[in-house]
Structure formats: C-alpha cells, structure tokens
Image (cartoon, rainbow, N blue to C red; front, side, top):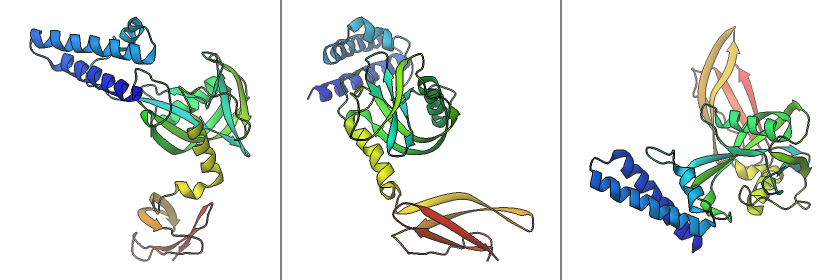
Length: 263
C-alpha cells in the first residue's frame, strides 16, 4: 500500500510539473505550485527523506516529466557475477547508475563499469528492461526504469573506484548484502538465470537485421526472420535478392548458429 501512495505522489508531482510548464493563468500556476508542494510532502513522508531534499531533487526539473533510467552492467566470470560495494551504504550491486545525457545506454554502462570497477568492457546485449516499482525496492522520489546490459571484459584491472569500496565476483550462493535501492535478490536471480538458461531470453521469433555477405566482391544487405522452436529444427529463408543464399538456423538450448551457403 505504501508503494501505491508513493506512485500517486509521483503522478501528482508529474502533473504539477507539466502544468507549470504549459500554464497560461497566474491562478492556475499558483494551484499547480501548491499541488507540487503537496506531492513533495507526501514523498517525504513515504520515503523518510527531508522535504527540503525532495524539493532540491526536483528544483531544476522542467517540461514534461519522464521516468529516469538506471543502467546496470552484468559481467560473468565462469559462474560468478561482478558486484561492487557502494561507499554510500557499504552494500553491493552490479556496477551502474543514472544514464547520462549524450551517451547511449551501452556507452553509459561501460563508463560506469570503468569508474566503479576498473574494467574496460564491451556491451553485448540488453538482458532486461525493468520497471523499478514492480520489485521490492525501498520507496524513492524518482520513478525509474532499470536496464540490465550484458558486458564482456576487454581490459583494465579489477579495483574499486571513487564511489566504491570494493569490486568482486560472487556466485549465486555466496552473495553479500545487497544495496536494495539499486538491486534486489529477485533481479540478481534473474541475471543468473540468463547465464544458466539463456534459451529463456530468446524470443520465439528472432529478427536479424542487416546480415552482411560478400559475393564477387559485392556487398549486399538483407533482413530476414528466423523461427526457432527447438533442437534440430532448420529453416531456410530467401527474403534477399533472388536465390542469393540459403540460410539454415540451428537452435538448441544454449546457442544459435547461423550458417550461410552462397550460390
């Protein structure tokens, strides 16, 4: 119930902010400002945060309010996942933070990993986009989405950063105390499930775009759709230039292999 009231407070704040952006009447402006003040007081009570701090958080927010985006880098070494210990609460989380303007989600997460764990990485794929309200996080003023991005190491040295005390790899049965404002046990389990049962993260229909091939030094591009329903099923597809190639997709529990034959 507490989270429901917080969600209502966030909606009131959002409506008030939008109203203050587009208002034409000084009387309406006063009403929207009062609504915003009420939303701050509600958030303060529900999140145990001083109302002055809530006011400071939103003071420079202008225009149509949208959810904030949190990115988290998921890196495995064998059956262990990278976590960093935050200075702010001495608890552990996958490296990450608020997405910065001017950087793509992949660029953001690689930057966060470098700053918090000392590793150079390459972002591989988005594992999950989660709404924070659907998980057991403590109440916060922000409405936010969480992006979990699989990354692989390319260099660097594992070490703590300016905002972290430590960086280590942990197995699913040896997890330290988690920073639940940033990560929950359920989300950690979901990431390990990806590692152990990756087939669950593949859609029934996998869309592959801009598959590049070369024939007689000529570069061609095409789009095609592969349907995978289990081990041993094969499908050919000729959506590209006439009889240019045939495609076989072999799908098993853990991997996709694509093989092409150029005619």
